[in-house]
Length: 354
Figure: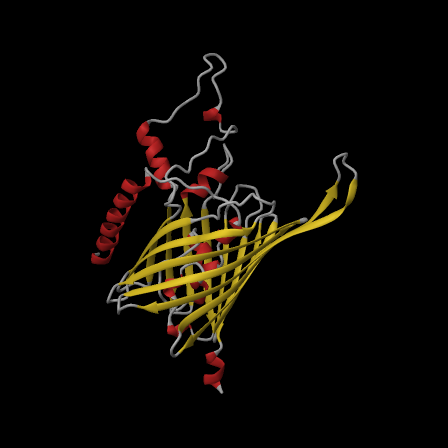
């Protein structure tokens, strides 16, 4: 009970500070949006694209470099995502050096497949492909028993038909862990960078910068952890007008459209920054995970048939030296929903066996 009270208390403080600062902020999505794709099945199961937890899972390090620890040494992980009309994946590896510190490298790739190419008159002239890549090197170190910091440096390459682009970016993050190791809080600034080579000369686009805050609390006597993720804090208003929404269509008689009250609009905007999740571990070998993303639900649901849009469900299984995770995320009712697969192993375990 004390842990839950602390979790809610800190959440209230962070949310109030966030609200006071967001009204003056603005932001844009920009190019290289693939940098914010979820990189592991475990993270996807919670419903967001990062996690505020320090438990030596190398797949979390790409999104939150402040959780890179010496215990990740020689950890290797592969992720593959069957995502809508594209496929993407990651390869991650961590290694620690006595003097230099703790590092985690990752290669990210996205394939959009092959497309039919045609000229202005509609005559088919062939095919073309589109793909994007990012190579990142992350570094993390502890400042004290409770505080860790970290950063990622990224090289970005994008090839869309005959258009090419190259950019650089960095992530910086900090994580607080309570002395009893049950509470974690992370602050992350993602994709601070520059498009060095634009797709078209003179047209430099902004990168998809994000500010994120995450909280997690593990119950002391039950292997259950709760997550609260605050995303896109650089921009308060994430709403848009959907012409397919019956509420946005004008009345045929009066010509007026429905409008939300001030409180309703505020609550809707507020919740679009919030992702909630939970994870329970059974006998340290099997985990069940559940997430809810309000923004995804509002933007991806079909009117009259909401289904499970915005919800995600996954599991993790440890088989000897291997950690296997799978997540199914519901993005749209009746649509093609993404499947996340992740396999991880610590190569040092093979040495121990020998």
